[in-house]
Length: 339
Image 1 (cartoon, rainbow, N blue to C red):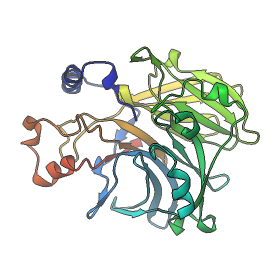
Image 2: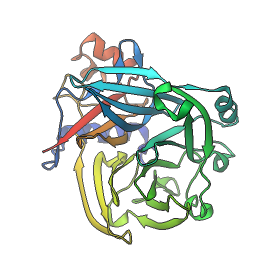
Image 3: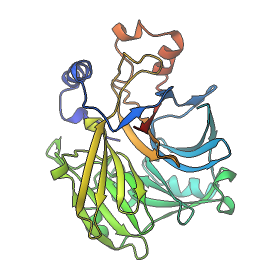
């Protein structure tokens, strides 16, 4: 996860973000924030850490099930009931998985994806250090008995795409595919961004790859859409995706035609709030997105530790539990419903 801190000096960036957060009034959105969201991503004393990925699995009885990925190498199962109560459970790795990952500079899990058409789970790992290219990529996770609800991953295997040189052309250490989704026919890999000198460029790429033969179909530039970063993707239906532009704090939707030209584009601003304090904001880094069976959108904040804890003028207005949640860098989850 690479934040926008590279663009401006640290203190100058913080000042700009705070001023914009206070002064900016977004256009009327297509989606509205669900009550009682945003919420802290925790159940009891259990909470996630540096959560970069979320994917919806299924709705069963009165419970929705999600997988979460942390960029410190952890995976969790999240259950949300119809009263929006959370229950979190850790997903364990076999010794075989631990041995394979032990060779990595960092277990940098950035996106987790569920393929409902084939009952497969994928995770995108960002490479770090000198050997980042050998680490970076999309991996399939193999659960015990091919059942996510065993909470146990027996093996992990890298997906070997046929056009690796072109797909990985702009991958760098700590810059990879932070947005990934899958539909009936294709993988969609969203590059977090790419650098020009010491700055992020004003656009990035989406790589559309055939699931059947792993061949790159098309590389789509986001320049005309003014999408600067892609930090999460989710499939709405075939040829329709939604994603998060972290640096602009927007959710976008892209509709492709049969040749993957952009047929329609829409976006809306993410409503940033401190849980229970709707009039107070903080510096957010939204890095993941998924859609449930009812079409509700969920996004998770991957705490940007340099700025996540609000300044004292804001902290003084918060109760002790909220202050402690910030101090522990507990992620915040958002839910949006279509109007």
